[in-house]
Amino acid sequence: KQEVTQIPAALSVPEGENLVLNCSFTDSAIYNLQWFRQDPGKGLTSLLLIQSSQREQTSGRLNASLDKSSGRSTLYIAASQPGDSATYLCAVPLTGANNLFFGTGTRLTVIP
Amino acid sequence: GAVVSQHPSWVICKSGTSVKIECRSLDFQATTMFWYRQFPKQSLMLMATSNEGSKATYEQGVEKDKFLINHASLTLSTLTVTSAHPEDSSFYICSARGTSARTDTQYFGPGTRLTVL
Image 1 (cartoon, each protein chain N blue to C red):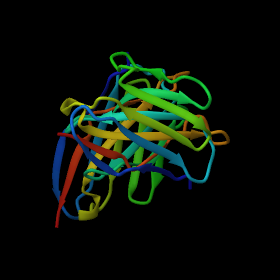
Image 2 (image 1 turned 60 degrees about the vertical axis):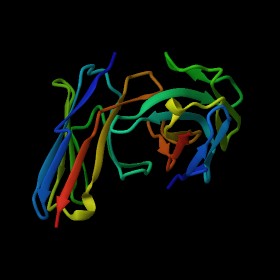
Image 3 (image 1 turned 90 degrees about the horizontal axis):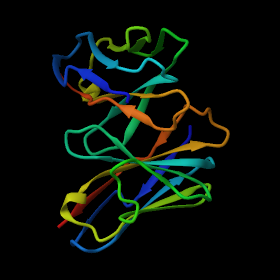
Image 4 (image 1 turned 90 degrees about the vertical axis):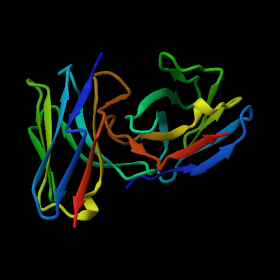
């Protein structure tokens, strides 16, 4: 069974700092890996999707990397802003499976 | 981009009543819809997968007679929580995967917060 872990569980940084969120998974037979953002009481917003054949994806101030062999992904946020405050979730589908296995999330607070 | 809506966004009901939550794909046809549940401070957990025109597939531990799922059309799936109890209070999120979309892309709805008194 796939297990997805995110470290740290919570992170508080001053505005402007660069930061890294970590995601690890136990089964490397993944189809891809997705990073989501969830605001309190809201649904999910997809941020980045990395195919299993890719090493990284970039969107604006966000950069996600994937190392399948070690079962790890990182989400790098540059020049953090208060509006980045949210819970960040990573999720992976197993090859041939329908559903996504979600990590436990990292709650980010960016202090103005 | 693909948009998925949910209705209602929040609902409060008395214990023992049934609640129906709708999930709609607004600008694409969704052959597969997924229902997730999220308890406070926990991650999302898949409850069931529904394919249009067929019975839903439930994850282990999810009671199919309690959480009725209907996916009668390519743009609508409903989740009915029957005889709701306070322990069913949770955040329910649906996602949809389209016919023409890449098989790895799920589009998520905004969620429905259910509170059972």
